[in-house]
Every structure is written in C-alpha cells, then in structure tokens.
Image (tube, rainbow, N blue to C red; front, top):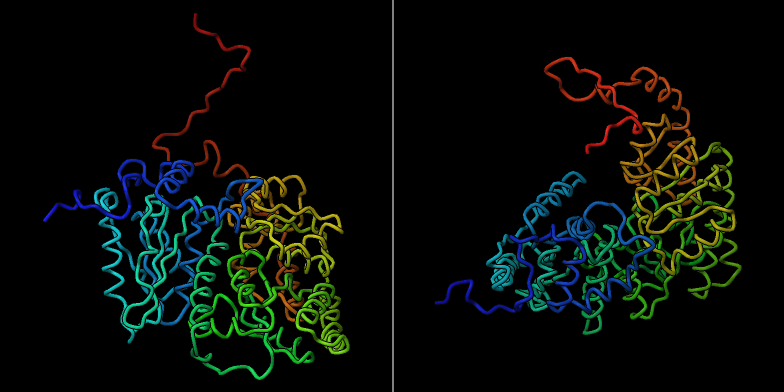
Length: 497
C-alpha cells in the first residue's frame, strides 16, 4: 500500500500547504489558490451573489459562523467543519456562546493529508459514520478557507446515504464577505436540494400541516413575535405567514417553497431568492416596519399575490392606526447613528425615523441588493446617507464626526462610543433580539432606545471619575513607579552624522 503522501487524490498539485502559510497567507493568495484548484466558478458565483465594494470585506466575525448557526438551529441536522484547527475552535466557541446545544463535528488535517487528497477521504469516512437515519435527516459539511483554497471537492460526496441527505458547501472568508450572507449560502443550498426533491415526487408535509390559505414565506432570521404580527397583517388579505427561512427543520423547506410569494425581510438572501424564482415564486423586498413601511409592503405583497385592492386597504386600515398609536405614544427624541452586520440595519433606521429620531448615518456590512432598494430610496429621500459594506473605521468615524446622542453598532463601535461618553447599544443582542414589525416593534424599539438616551449623564459621570485611568502611565503592570520621560520636539532632535 502506498504512503498517504504518495496517494493520488482529487485535489491536484495546486493545493495550499496548511503548514506553509495556510489561512494566514492572505485573501489574495487563498483566492488565487482556489481558482487554480478548480473553484473559479464557485468564487464567481459568490462574487455575483454577494458583491464586494466599496470595501473588499467589512470586519465581522468569521463568515462561516452564519452557515454553522443555520445548521445548528435545525432539528436532526449534523454539522461538520473541515478547516484549520484554530478556526474550528473559534467557530465552535462562538456557536456555543450564541446558544448552540449540539456538538460540532471536525475533520482534522495536516499538510500531508491536505496535499495528498486524504482529507477528502477522511471527510467522506466521517459522513458515512454520521449518516444514521435514526438520528439525522441531513449531514452538512462546510469547507473553511484552506480546504476551499486547496479544492477539497465536497461536490463529490454522495448526495444521500442511508436515507440521510448530504450537503457539502464552501464558505471561505475570502469569498463570502459576512456571516449574514453565509446564512444564505447554506439556506440556498438546502432550498435547492429540497426543490429538486419536490420536483421528483411527493414530499413530507410541514409538522403543522399545509396552510389552508396561500402563504408568504419570510426570508431572514426574526424575533419569534414578528411572524405572528405579520400573520395578523396578512389575515384580512386572505394570506398567512409561511415558514421562516432559514428553517428549523428540513420538512419546513418544502412548505417555504410552497408559497404564493417570498418576502425578503433581510435583503442579503440572494441564493435563496434565486431558488424561489426558479420555483416560480416572486420575491418582494423591504418589510412591514412603521406606518409607511407597512403600507408599502402590504401593497407590494397584495400586488404580487393578485389580491384585490379593497382587501389590501382593509388590511392597512386594521393595522396602521395601531402602529401610528405606538409610534406617537413612545416618540424618540435624539440623534441616533445605526450600524451593524445583520442585514436589517436599514429597517431599524426606517423605524427610528418614523418614531421621531434624527438618523444622520446608516452603515451595514452587507452589500446592496435588489431587495434593499425600496428601503434605500426611502432613506435617501430623507437625506440619510447609507453606506453598504461599511468598514469599522467608517462607522466609528461617523460617531466621532456626528456626535450622536446614541450609537447603535457592533461591539467595537459601542466601545468607541462609550469612550466618548456617548450611550451605545450592540445591534445584534439589543436591537435584533426584539420585535421590529407592527405595533409591537414600534413600542419595543422605542423603549430600549429611550432608556439608553436617558442614561447619558451616567457615561459623563463615569468618564469624569475615571479620567486618565487606563492610559499611558496608568495602564499595565509596573514593578517600579513609572518615570515620565520628556520627548523632545522634532526640531530639537539631534540627527546622527
């Protein structure tokens, strides 16, 4: 038997050596290696689905976390990672930090198994052992940066084993810009698989059975109360909310595809939208936030479903007064900057503006898509600049330049704002984790925003109390009292001969 290094694997001779640069080799090196190893079309599709620019890639968590999160939230789904050990450790830690209660599978490798093609054989063996229909409906394998760059061909895995579906996807950090878009990579792959199954014959009905009314599938993770609120808005039109994609189990994918229209609540689900289009289902952008957003969204849904205008007007007349009452009952008075990497930043900005807030800047790590156009036009018509693919530096610069009463953003943006005595809220945990749609959304958002706005005096007091602590001579650990050293002015420095 030949040694592993002598085996002829499916990768070829252009793979990335994990021991010589690996994932630290830089995005350009990895991208070039992936193209050379046969992944040109994959990267081309990702570039079209998730266009970069004006910045190549915002500073967010590893994109693969988005796909991993989708799978870990699904019943009877096993998740396996193929990548560098440090990446797998970080992704596993983050997944459990965000509430995952299942183990993450890992296929380890070294330079020899990667280059020889033995890694693919190891992945296939792991899938074979996991494909137990008593425990799983699906096994998902995710290639991280180095296996993708080396061309580890997950497409050659069997599509089904023992009745268990097998999905292999590549989610490299140099090809998928954000974790929000990586959610779409796996969701789109699952919808594609499910659509193929449905085209071949009868499929399993959703756990709660098929809806008696035509449904509207909702694209994008949402607070659990939002689909319920959307259902109340749709009822006068004779419609019902369908499953939320990403789904919580495989059989819901069939119900999602069996809709009258798909609503891209989060606009970055490009691959998923393509699957709905191939299934003959139209996709509508924006979401029912605030009075104007809800009215426009209901009009768009009604038009896409062929609903008579009098029924659409009935739906608006039932819900809009309640939203208006919630907005007027809890007005927001203050200047608020909005930034984040979840994909719903434009929706939050719209709701803030309708609540009375002054929003001078909106930054989102996600790219511009056809389903963000309505929200973009609404914001720009009110003079609000929107930065797609916003960098951390841009978000912080906006806070410094605009001096808002409140900054909403990612963790480093929040930290920078608080250092300036500006109240700040972490978008993911404090804004995304509450309803946004209908009257409940208006009231809930106003409550958290107004509470934060009222606390500015506390930041001023804390900054005054801790002034000078944690910087220069007051930071670090000293075994002797620090000695100040006078630095001469540049003009007095003596240059060596």
